Length: 333
Image (cartoon, rainbow, N blue to C red; front, side):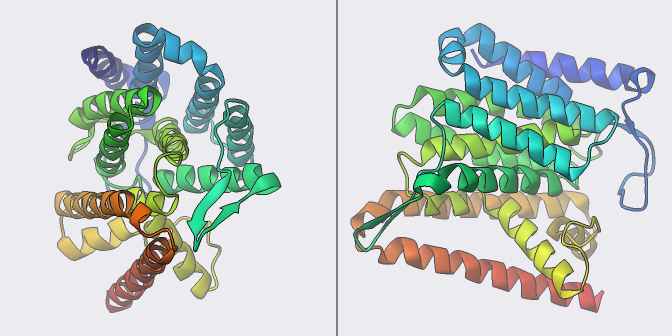
């Protein structure tokens, strides 16, 4: 079953690379680029087309039962394609994510509770939609921001999706499991072309779509695991985004201004190797996913709320440590 999405993704990407110069899909190096020659971009067109087409063909019932979900993914995918071709302002992309989040709500996919603490369930009620939008837009952009080194965003996405596939398997949730496994299949084909030195980049058509897909699967998983677990299952993109924004604010700069101070940029300078930096961050995400798995398994044994609260505190300690370490490295550099 999972051979089809892999093969389609491989073929679509192969032809994208071949015809990219003719259709205007080349990434021209600039002052923030690590490559020195034009590279085909918008690999997301290849692997997300394969994802949607193969899912519709092989899992037709699930596809039709969750049509608003796939409409939302398609909307973000098309937004990413247009952004790769013409460029879109952050406001327009946020609006697209907002509309897609409403599609998710129509499908019954939203964050209605932050979990139970000390016997009290923190329900969001009327805040469910805005909070869901905050989470979805936050992680969608976080994965987009971490897409700065060859195979980094794709490799981290595979680690996260494998964890969610396992959750779907354990709790016998076909939608979570199939979304994750189809995602893994198409991204693995992409990584064959994106591994250093990359032959194609995923572009916003890929990073926005993957970020939205993963955040959607995360919300679906909340019915089985405590919401705090998601912080660990998607840790590296979240930590990187928060650390970078805090650093920019501390330097009296716009938190949304692009620069080369992401964790992957700093690690690349520290290691002197793209491959080592990517491997380090993928292994770090693997470690966080393992911690998340431990949380998911044991959190129900602590109904008084101490364990989830401790995990939230621990997560923000990770953020503080990352901020101090990478700020020190930047100053030293």
